[in-house]
View 1 (cartoon, rainbow, N blue to C red):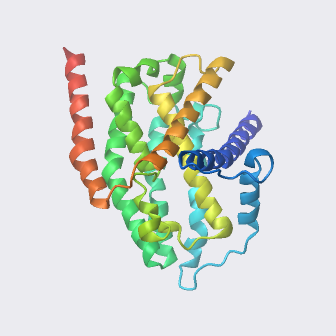
View 2: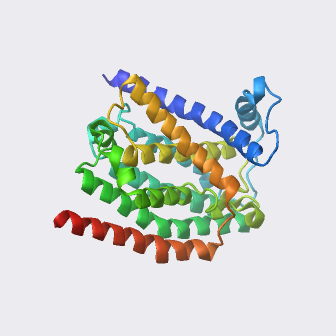
View 3: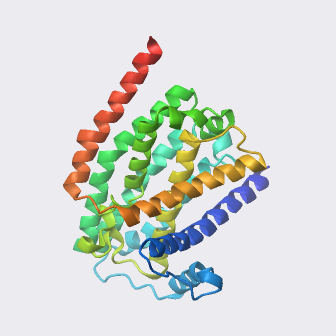
Length: 311
């Protein structure tokens, strides 16, 4: 049994790595198409081998840490980032954590909260002013939207009566939830953009202001580790969105799995589309939107729901 769970979890991790590789290709293709450009099309047929080529290039380059960096923390940051990404994917019902825990929504909240420390650790260990500013931005940003994210998932637990994504998907409860309360689902997707540091909330990695943000000093395999972890969390947020708000009950049938995968791809494309379509928010605009708009809105909606359910 343990060996079966081990190989199943290993298969999930390999699937995540492969999905991240070709999600980057999809992003580059979509961004180039939206910008009326060609995008990667030289390696293999239609650029299909581009992610493999990029990975080989990054992992074979020399890794040179900054001379003034805190080298132990600097080396550990990419490893911690990858570890947190893989821990987040442990909520998948076929992995070794979720079936035994039964409260994987709380597990996801813990992992997503701890993941914010990667930015501040990498910024501090780099001894670079650009990376440090990116890390501080990331930490302040998390404080702003993490409350809304937690309240939204707590409300999902309250209305469904379960703390497990597996129960939500298997019961089909969330098939109507996203349409019954579309404003809350839209709010959740907006919070996911901030959680994943994606445009228009990519203030942690604003190239025009911070060169590349908290990962400015990382190169070669260390940068690839941060990159894989970031895109792995994006796909995880898409999966959590589908499970929480738009899932059907036949999730473990072949047709249900294909339908779930299709919805995850749609939300992944939405992440790419917003990057190509919307300008970046100013830092103060994001903070004010989180505290003065998103938080009052989600609290007001749930107070209304509780009132309606009570009477």
